[in-house]
Image (cartoon, rainbow, N blue to C red; front, side, top):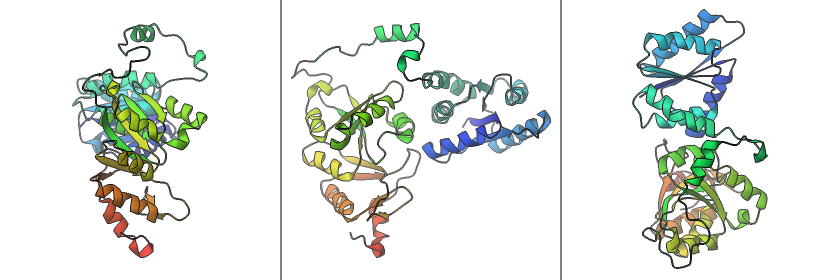
Amino acid sequence: MVGIIIASHGEFAAGIKQSASMILGETEGLESVVFMPSEGPDDLYGNIQKAIEKLGTEEVLFLVDLWGGSPFNQSNRFFEENPEKRAIVAGLNLPMLLAALSEREDYDTAHEVAKAIISEAKDQVKVRPEELEPKSEGKAVAASQDDTPKGAIPEGTVIGDGKIKFVLARIDTRLLHGQVATSWTKATNPNRIIVVSDSVSKDNMRKKLIEQAAPPGVKAHVIPLKKLVEVSKDPRFGNTKALLLFENPQDALKVIEEGVPIKELNIGSMAHSVGKIQINNVLSVDQNDVETYKRLKELGVKFDVRKVAADKPVDLFKLIKEKESEGLKL
């Protein structure tokens, strides 16, 4: 596995490492090195050397804050020792780090990972209002080559095999956020993220924020429950690979009972509120939730309890069983 060292002036590197762990979970092969005002170049060099030793691999990717700054200069000394197996990328930001952590699962060398993360790190630099963003000729060319059908597609048209693909159906109170936009999008490769909620579909502000939070290359939509039932039976969505997001298990049950073919639910996050009991660090349920999960199980739905894709699945009903003394009943 490619080792990653993030290095910065001040505590930036340590903070961005913590941010990544909140989104992707704790990861191996990642070290942070901070350069403090009281330290000199030799101190920084020694700390980077210690970080390399902790990684235990010659394939090392350095992510640094500034090209030409001290973290870059000292990392460059180690790069020069073994340029065939090491790489440096400057301009460190969180999307860059998340991309590196994900891409190294597919690549074996630091050079390959470095090459793969550049476009994603740049694509996430955006501005609002959108008219402040400089026009890109490359983007215009890409748009002109888009082969997505334009305009309304006549009813009854069969696209692909005529069946929408649900690459993931997730219960998550927060809906579309960092863990979904990075970890789960990378793991499931959807071309659409669909938030399914009657309440959110009526809230124009929340809808807009969700649509704008979609990762590069993926479109986000917010639709009511009834619309998902219709879409699941519409042959015009045959080329759609959808990642579904529900706020609660009750909404998922309603669409499944209406015939939406969801075979498995990823239980990712259910926020604590009055009357709910915490069954692990991210899931809180009440008796209504328990009864809903039991009904889903009767319908043949399987459960995948994971916050991020890298986590190990746990048994939902075992977690509930352990809380029977606090009032939950199976």
